[in-house]
Image 1 (spheres, protein in one colour):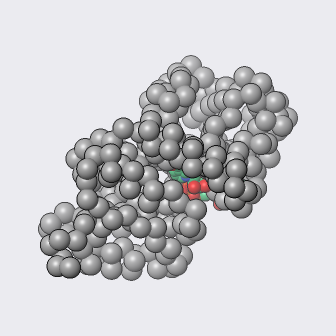
Image 2: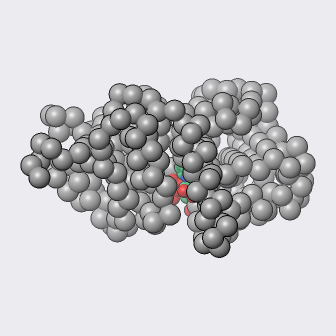
Length: 286
Ligand code: NAP
């Protein structure tokens, strides 16, 4: 097959990456919109990200998604950053133009806000919000969350200084406080967002008693075939409203797809297809 007739090549790079649903999501977007493309999940060694990106684009790759733990590195490597990626300090979408300029964007924030607001009907305005984690995902969503004017946004992280660093960086954009996981303010939060990678290892950041109540929306950016460790923990704490990050994943992917292909796919049928697939996997005992 000649190079000209090959479908455009996209991929997600991460470590781990085998769990990623991105290849399926982009295949469904491509089918829905009649686009020809190939999308793979590429496992990249922790010290090999810069090299992997260079090889991908030298071989004619069109665009990349970036996941744990490479989003900050992607931000550093990009030649140009979007307005929303620059303050985030994290990039989840890369594309290269014909002059070889590597452009970095961050679609996590818009993905989370669309899932919260449009899919789940959660209004952040005037709410007490707790964000767990201070990695690339947390950085990417802080500014869009602050734009919604929560009454308070507290960032708590295992490594406290990373949380306080984030709070300092975003202080001008809204009411933001920060601490380690042990010093979370004694408060019943309206919305708790788990943006830690703890769930990838089945772990949960333990919270002070009373942080989560029956009305607290508990949103885990992690997703799986069954309720995540954080969702189960939140239910044990009494929350009647727990959500995984599948909707955010599909929404951020839709925004990446729009950047690469210039066309916005519909997300609801793709979210529904992934939920159906999860139910089938559970029924098959996988
Ligand atoms: P990252 O940059 O590697 O940051 C990881 C974060 O998790 C850090 O805050 C880290 O704390 C914390 N952490 C790791 N293990 C922990 C543990 N055992 N207990 C408590 N905290 C722990 O990763 P990221 O890019 O921010 O991604 C975070 C999570 O969000 C991942 O699970 C990712 O899959 C998910 N995510 C989902 C979506 C979606 O669309 N649904 C989008 C983006 C990210 P330290 O600073 O102390 O190391």
